[in-house]
Amino acid sequence: MERWDEAITAYRRAIKLESDNHLFHRRLADVFQKKGLLDDAISSYQTAIEINPKSCWHYAALANTYVQQENLSEAIPCLIQALRIKPDMENVHKNIAYVLKKQGRHNQVRIWKYQKKLPKDWLEKFFNLTGNWQVTSNSSKTNITRIQVSEYSYINLLPSQTIESQIYPNFQKKKAKLAEAFLAVVSEGKGCVDLGTTGVITSDNKLVTDISTGCAEIIISSSKLPPVYEINGTVAFLPVNLGINNYFHWMFDVFVRLDLLRRSNLMSTIDKFVFTNCSKKFQKESIEALQISPEKVIEARLFPNIKARKLIVPSLMGRQGSLRVTQWGCNFLRSLFLKPENIEKLASKQERIYVSRKLTPYRRIVNEEEVVNLLAKLGFITVTLESISVAEQASLMAGAKVIISPHGAGLTNLVFCNPRTKIIEIFSPKFINSIFWQLSNICGLSHYHLICEDYEDNSSVEYPWGPDIFVNLERLLKILELAGV
Image (cartoon, rainbow, N blue to C red; front, side, top):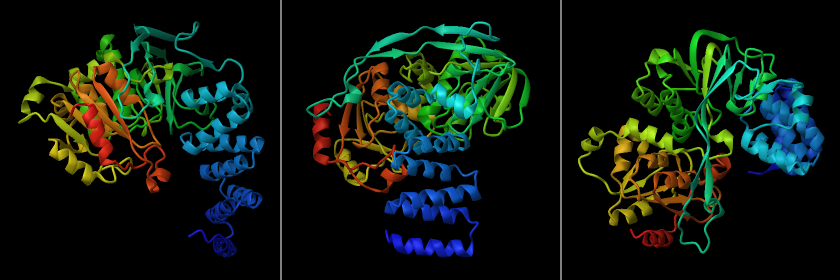
């Protein structure tokens, strides 16, 4: 209710009753911060930390207050401590980028945003990482064997079409690099997983930076790693730092990399396959489609520190400054799920499809009933892809000629569309991502984008990557007309 003075009085009374309750001190500090009483906020956050020094949230909030004061020297150690405890805190990541920018270290901002690599002086000061502590998969004089599968290549990108007077900048790129693909075989290597971070470590305790993800320096510098789970065999190590339960990240950041093992004739040599998590139906279905038996699967959430006689790590697409999606990855997914017998099971092909996100907690169309009614008059059916199998999703998309959807992981299934299928992707102006335009280019699809009006609701705060969307029906009709639908 923003009655800050009354809140301060209430929290102070609570603290008198329970002076060692760290959350009371933290909430009092939050109120001080809201009122702009930053010194008082800092004092209360520090008290909360003294009581509970293991809370990442206390350090993150204290760092945020120092950032507000432009006291960067005090903010940095708090950000580092929050990162050590919980490496995937989005607000901490943003504040690290802000601090680096304020220090004029613009190249380091870019490296942090895309590679989550901290500056060398920070690593030395806060992580005690000096000397020769890191290598890459192609470094000489290491016990790493690198198997090259494909070289870098480039793809020309066709622009996305829109009713706006100018194409949005995210869709203006004319050429993109496709990553090289390789396998790194690390003898007596370790694979470690933490929140938002994975580290591949050699037998002489060096971090292999190009096949690790997130801020893996936290792992290599830690003295408190979980107990090692040793496997006397060959292990394929697949975990990544992003979206372990997200359909897109699973398919293109994790699963397609198994094709590199298949193309190198190494699948049959693998004793165990390590994934971060395999609890979702689409994860189980895709593993089954590749005929990997359940007894060969290890979940890193249960065994976060694995050592193997041979640790095989497929290359990471997103770490190379290139597209996350590749032509070979698309071909691999189509070969597994787009079977003629599955397509024949469909009673009739649905040529016009609207993909609903009503089952998700964010990035939904708030006036979806109006949108669905309008599209129904034009022959569109509405589907929620979460309710059907991957094979059924593949078959559904293969029969479509026009697909309309708000931006979301369901559009991963564009990989199963036939060339020249028309895609109309709907965005909030607060979150515009070009990944499915890139996928459309690789698959030869015709991509259109509709950027909707700004819409304020709680999802914008709770899910900054997923604000809900209000669709103007007149503008929707205009982009349908542009697409010839």
